[in-house]
Image (cartoon, rainbow, N blue to C red; front, side, top):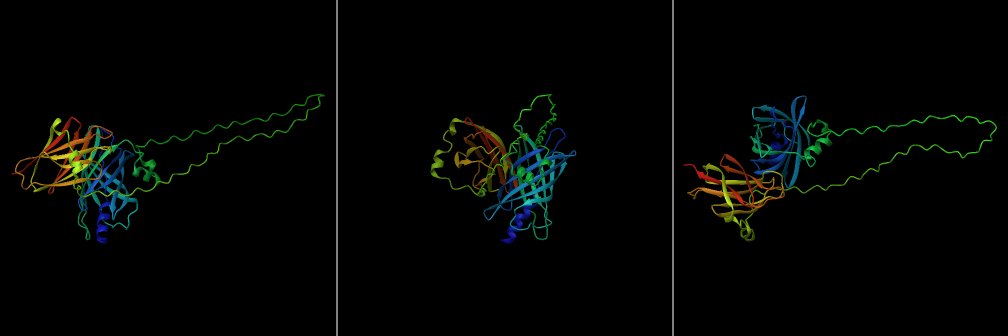
Length: 364
């Protein structure tokens, strides 16, 4: 068990972030998404911040992973190398973490990510791999992050600000310093004597000191730490109620084939994610007319299903049926298909009138 903990932390303590830069577009900003680890077969939350300093790109990342039911994090500084359309990243330093044990030395990760722009959204995706050491075999996995405009909810940005590195983030607008309050000086006027007039006794009036408004410090709200969300490795057995409700208007919608895939294995592993903002998208997956994944809620945690193809002689049609459109229509998702060592990444979109379909044909 202790070796397993070291292995998991070795994978995540030095995991890099992916960033892309081109001279024609500004790639600085916040990127959030998921990281899939082939060793644990789980997906984890992942954030990257790309900043510009003195004409060069610098980066920071925060990796979240779950071990023994507890979520841990690590914040790293990154070095970014651009190679054509690929971004190669490597950790420079571990800045902050709450790991249960000290991370092993000598383990580093190489991320090689491709940049794409889909539906006006920047996407970084690709593979990561750790180096081989005397103690650890290489670990591999997959990363998918998308550029986000709302940085206020980012835990990475908050942690960097707590570490005093908020000013290093060029994509965050700096607050303007408050303008100084002008202080008006009063000139003392000497009283001139008046001839033959008995001075009237006046009440002494103390000069009032300027009033300074005291700001009562606000009490900081105590935020309870959320319970970690553990990604489920397999789809739960669908209930009869879900099966009865799934894809009720299937025959009334247009089916659009968006991709064809040639596979070789006797089984395919399907992993479903939300492809954008987590806004409540729900889909049902229909294989050759039969519902195999009813009413699945999409998020950054993978929902998986293994389909066995040994006895299937004809082609396989997978239809992604949009049950709900979420708060940001249309219904969008990411389907990752594992065919042995091969991996296919398919983004789909649908609404209440049209379904997306993928056709699988076995190689001869």
